[in-house]
Image (cartoon, rainbow, N blue to C red):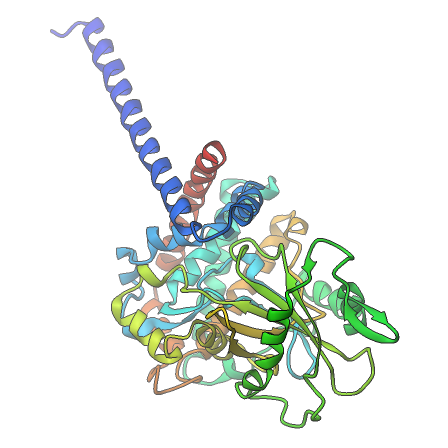
Length: 456
């Protein structure tokens, strides 16, 4: 007979071995995270890297925003994609860096204030679930950051999001309703309609211009002395940008009735300290003449350098080849094409240019009504689930119209019909899969964040 002492000794030894294995695994993951961050951000200047890391240290959620490449390395080719997708016919354009703060309000080319995806720097063609999972992870992180939601609350929030995504896809299957769908104050609910109404009433082009410019002898000029977010550019950069305006205009698909004076450059400045994941990317603001000689209808163009997206090394070769063929290998064209595919009534100023530094830049107007929803207001389960549902509807709508509705030569199929066919009758299984991935990976992000904070 084995003595009680022997059993206790064996149990303690097993526990110690388990703790030791966990410690080794944790140290291995920490080393991995540190190495990945070092490699990904190696091209940044020491000052740019320090600024980005300082922003990432603010919370696990900001860390998640600044480390998109970790998500793609961990889950980009996950075997779990195969149950509800993973093949050619469940590919569409992806935002590529989905999280709650990469959606928000802005004005479309008809002047409507709408809510939708607003960042396409990381866009790629890939399986729809990779956007769904990343968005769901961000919901869990945002809920945990708010500090008032239990584990069951977090599960309910994610379920509301994923069910709304599937219901919206099913609603579009067999029709083209997604191609003209807008999310406005008139057809949203919960806090979202109030948010859009407030943005519409409080924002204006004059207010935006007054934030970034000043009038010198009655003419608007960038005010680079007003704060840290704008800096003067060299005469060489100024001249280079001005010389590229004609080639940029040739990339535009809208605004055919603009007067000849439109786009006359009135000033160039460097944009600093914007974003988290894109911190360190070269970025300029260009002030141009608007439709009239009035100083109050000038426009500010955001000219932002584009790099290879984080997902690129972690997609199938066929998905990479398809994305590359669509954009001809030009990263700014990639971002612009994704914007057009995923969006509706997109910015007439959307285009691209290549500057003397050899980098390719996507160009968009700075919207006077661009705002992210203040997630701190999602402090009750009802409020959060209402918005989670609408985030699911928004993402599904963008995905559904980026298939054959955008270009049938690239996507000769309907992704909404395909997703519906693969999930019909198994919504509960899909919800469970998204819930498990979102919950587990959000916890991994929190561990990675702790490793990051202690290591940098």
